[in-house]
Length: 380
Length: 231
Image (tube, chains in turn yellow, brown):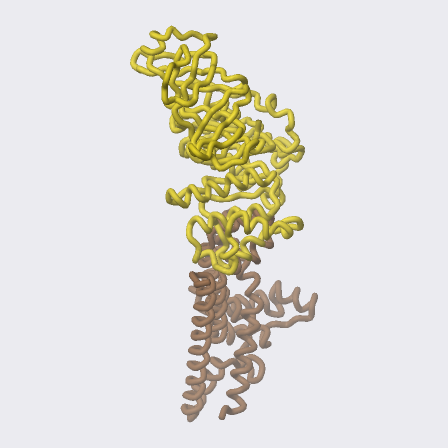
């Protein structure tokens, strides 16, 4: 089964988009992908190990040449086997952050950062150093850096080469929890601050939910699905494929005001409905991405009387997911103005409530987690 | 302290060995790179040819040089008629003989150190916009520096001690091709020169020890630069 959506339909602005149509064979493994990746935001290549994520990234970077096919970035052809074109990696102007930091051991951090620096990069040196918090490391040699520090330097080095596209191959691999979160925050900040599209390879759903706008799902060297992350997370058919992703809805809301006395923050959804959440440090007017796990949503037909659920949202049942005799739970997709909300309940509750598409319901939201990233005008 | 003949032999030796290393350095590194990084037809054959001077009797190498680079040799005639260069029986010829004998050692050491350079670092450099040449000079060669130094000193020492190929191709002409080993050989042939021979022996040992120590010192310095250093 294929769930390929014609990606270019959703990205009319394909000026800087990466269009690829490639075939590659490495021993028993074969890769065949036809994709258009958006020119903005973070695109994640997601899949189990051996699904072809890294192979695809190497093809884009020019470190490998496809057996057949073409890769274009904006209007420029990077590879076209039919026409015998192959732009070597050093003329592609793509930044690559490898799984291992790959810092040059004989250069100090400053030398590593400056290695690929071109014209405009010079002016940004200080800004990038500050953004990544590596100012104190400049005179050190790579061998003396910790794993997290080395990755940050590697990211800075790639950024300063003024890339048109930043490719990141599992840049958090091998870091422990705290370091991982720290670096993830840096990358999320980066994605919001710089106007360079990022292609991010990972097999970790948590990482991707935190930073990806667009998701390409790979399996056995084939593209299984491709689309905005929020859309893919809504698709029942992909639930098993995206097993690692805690099924959740991503909802955008605007900060309305704070109730410091109760340590609460009021948010307003696009359709005017309100949510009250534990205090968030964000100024009124800030747009936030909320992540609402399916298990945190309960449904009721009427507004319940006295309850501790602060958040009651009026919604309409849009679609009821497939039911299986051996499974107790069933998933529903609700419409919340322009946004979608997923809920999971038992089949028994479904029958007792007599839910059907088109029925209005009250969604009771127990808790919400925040996407670390501010709404940054990603791929949507 | 040193006799005129000794000084002369030492200077000729240094000049011959220095020139030998100078002319094989670039081709040696290129060959080492080819062997370390490229697959091509006839690689095994080239590898064998490169090692030949190590296993052949040096006299054979000298004789082959004479056949090819001598006045009547195909290469020699071309050099003579085209450029007026004559190699046999000149100190330049001795440098060629020493270089040929030293080449395998240089290629071997450089090849090993090139193979140890992480190609992933070269790939990273290329994604940062570095051309192949820039990658070679900023990443590959600096990282291979310890092996490069070791190989150079080894080659120098080999050229310095070269005897068989030199005497066959360049003969033993005082003031021209009489290097230290050849001078020692001549003294051994001369009755009653035992003391002079012993002195040359000691000088040879001293030069060899010095170059080995210099190589070790340089390599250690280069390695330290690459390894952990507290900033």
